[in-house]
Image (cartoon, rainbow, N blue to C red; front, side, top):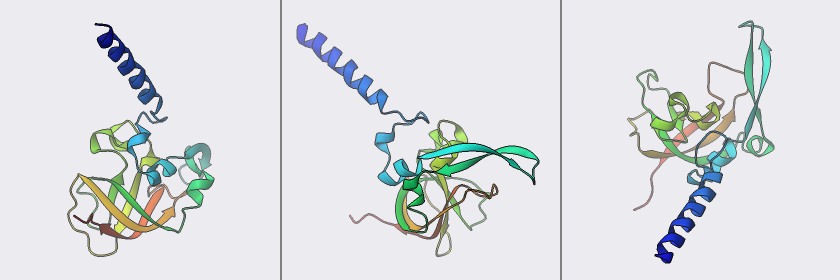
Length: 158
């Protein structure tokens, strides 16, 4: 009986420790790859946008994120299905579709536009890995804040 109570209390303590790992976006950061953990290090500041005549939140990239600008990275995520992409790009999310930025539970720093080097193929909504050159976008609101250019899909060796 005492062992069962001890095991239950230990379980609650471990659950509490796991809960502390939840990031500011409500996601468990321990399940993300190192690149996504770095890319989530963004703060936001409101600035006036003269074209739209309204205050808009602009990303302020951390030094760690800025260090990745223009570099080749390999990143794993979930392709968000949509008919809107017209074959040019796909949107990759750090989280499964049910938890992605568009569905609530995360911020715009958890998704990126991926422009495949070769003509786009269909991508499953399971995890997909891409390698490409990372572009940071702090000002153009017609695109996401992260853009992966010249991307190729990377397959795990069996």
